[in-house]
Image (cartoon, rainbow, N blue to C red; front, side, top):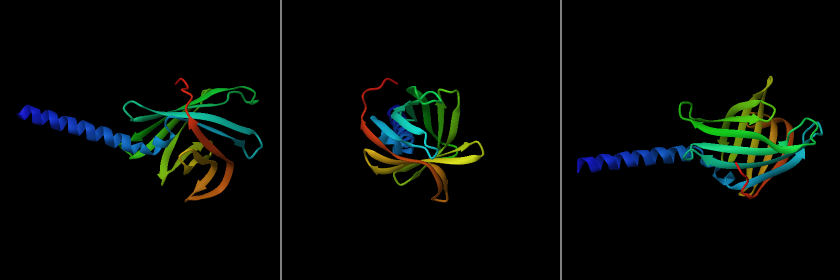
Length: 172
């Protein structure tokens, strides 16, 4: 009987731990299983075009993002460009992200949540840059990149929309 009680408590503890880890990344649930597409122009006139798919991995403790975009500086080749990871850090109680690109670079930063909005912040050279996925509805996010301080945009480098449709089962 005592062994049964110990096993029950172990299962409950594991279940609660798994649920809390999943909840910490639950803001991403709406993005999962859809192919998100956006097109626009940067402030300097260059083209922005991106397709991103998100999936949970490792028992919902990671979010994997895989993106297509231009793979050359001349913007003539289009294909797999970035592979990203989002993870809840239990020590700092923040969501951290790493984005690896085809050019050998890595961008790291944090993701904060405002309502249903995702706010990515990272160092780019001397600047602190913000990417915001602003929730409109389950299939649309306004997407902005710029200088975002104290809840206000000081400068916007890119403004477009990500539209989500059913995933075409893109291989990860």
